[in-house]
Length: 173
Image: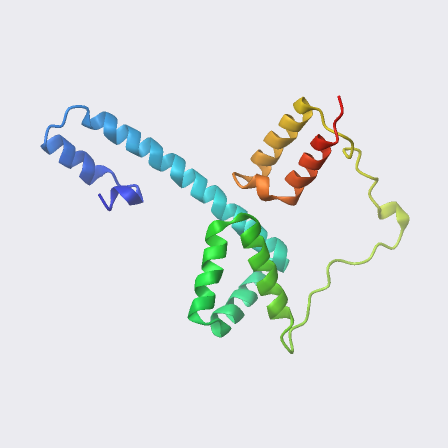
């Protein structure tokens, strides 16, 4: 059973066949389908958290430096809290990533990387976004689907979704 929880259903399939349980293959197919959905959700959540930490740190090398510092300086109960935050994902993971990056960069001798170079001409500026008005129910559904596709299952905890909800609440149609 433990192997089935890790995606290996062969021992369970053999056990059900050995005991000649009617419908055993159907149970296995259902379990495999459920596991595949669970695994896909966990993979999406992991990717979302990875994107959150990379956004907080700037790049993978900077995040690895933060992790090395945190491993060397965190106490056991702090590690448990950090792991819990990243396991939860969403805004909790984002807040923890921001906290760790800020604490690391506040250490003596650590420099904060420059965030790009300043614009030297107004031609480099982007035009203002045109999608700032109220959203109809149909447009809100489309934007929500777009964000779910872009950000994964925890899209509702993103700042982008909060802006879309705010625009939807402004609709008077």
